[in-house]
Length: 198
Image (cartoon, rainbow, N blue to C red):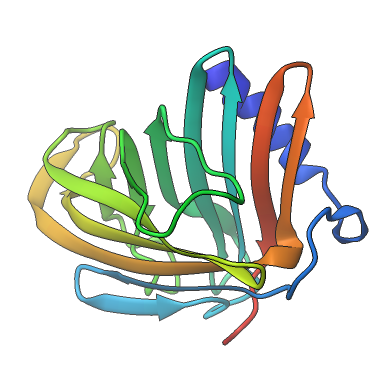
């Protein structure tokens, strides 16, 4: 599934706005609360987010990611959610929920990386994170990510559990940022966009 994801991500990342197959608005925003700290898009610079749902011969997966620009201009993935076996397309009903096999985040409210990580599936498996489709209309796609996840310190050399932390996030993709396509038997639904302030 990992190989399929990287193919899909490459296809998504190369998309240009003028090639979008969908009509609608170009909205692109998020509001994320982790461990009691709330952050909205472009707090320190231009942010970017994407999601991809791919399936091939019965294998499927969904992934979502935010790249945040910190105060020093550094750009890194700060919020990642993935769910094996999940499928999303323009017909997916509101209320559909995916459970994370992997979730990883940093504290988005910090102007630079503060050393804490929020992880499920890589460092440990405590907590539960789900993503729910709350809107799938001709105007926009809206997701809610919520649950609890372990907070870690110490980095990769000395990871130490701190405590379970809550996550509550809303991510909005305007329909104009969305694509569906089939290539070589791969069914791909995706969106990627530069974030805009609400």
